[in-house]
Length: 179
Image (cartoon, rainbow, N blue to C red; front, top):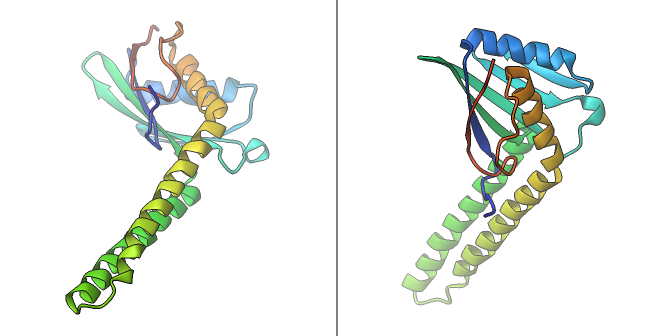
């Protein structure tokens, strides 16, 4: 099954506290032989591919770490860089506005017994929105190797020893980490 989400998520359950988990991820980033950029906050981590290896479609990983009764829950979300994500949101907003204008214009024309050519904006905007969505999915697949790389980095840092039975960045999964 293909995951159609533009921003895939995953969840890990770890036996350490949220603060210790963030520190483990920081140390894992420092030990890595690949260059990454990390921003660390209490219970929040952002990891990006280093500028020297970053491409247009390179993902970033946002991690939220929450304390749980027996440790912490690590929730990760992959997505495009913030500027690219903003571009997609702006494109969707413009196309939604175009659809609304087409509906209003076309219904006004129809009410006045004029040719309702304004309604043609609706399917045109929907096709364009589908194209934007398709390009986002293609971009995610182009950055797929880096998605796997970022997830593997985090799993190793927090002590997930076994290979989970999942297709990376495709489905949500809860994995018990060993310490």
